[in-house]
Length: 365
Image (cartoon, rainbow, N blue to C red; front, side, top):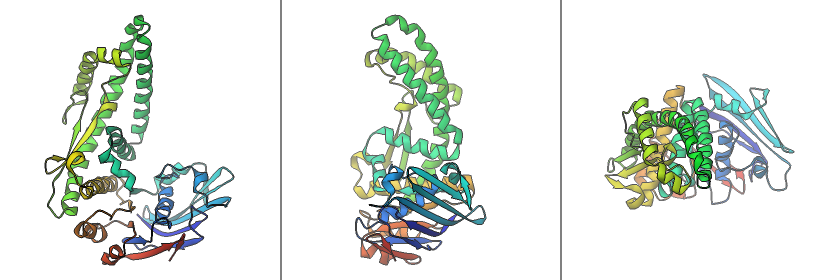
């Protein structure tokens, strides 16, 4: 999978223009606030019509403009294809190979990418919810029904939490709690099972990438920590039993707190480098390298599933990395089309083969 051409008009601060990237590494060079990230965002929009920065469509229209338009020629499914996204007057338009589509979700069937942005460093620095979100989001790309399973679990969880708050005032409601427990245990066991299946692959591939990025100096390890005591290798039945036992043991804690204290919504990933906690002891460069390893592993697993390599988008990835780690990302990520932004002259000079675009005030050359 590769981007052969990208056109843009009134998208953020990007002036009317186009680029023709190469099939290997494309460096987008410029000072801060010139539009480098906007260019990556324009490509990412074709993964389903949404911003990776969480922006709404009307926020992506250029200042004092009434619409934006982005178009992309790309190679996917063994053939050349094209797509277009427009937004004007609170209406989004999507075309795929010249045919209008009523939803941008159709784009996910023909184009995929994996993105790293500085915000992803929060996977290491902040709480477990972001690590769960990363894991679940990656799984959803492999199993479409997993998103529905997560939604079902969250709905039941909300209902159970509401009941726990009401039990504080109406103790007779305790008798209805097992009804919600059964549903939560069933969907929760399926979630944990799916997470373990994906996690095993992710840990192995991420470890390989991290050894490459660090020049063999660091060993990355990841451990899934289940709040109910489930461990790798457990069957779904054994996970259900552990959830059942954990729910019974935690029931009084749930009464006191007014929310559900056990379940996959409380699980976490523990990440270590050479046996030490990355969150507590890792340097900025190590933390950045680890998130990159996870993202590259996500791309590798996605390519195995789709039998086609996704495009890799790396935003402000090179800062706080030493020259050897920068060299790995610029010159040794084989087989993928890569777009990487940077603002240091030395970064673009490290590129051995590829293409360099410069951007200034939204104008790309």
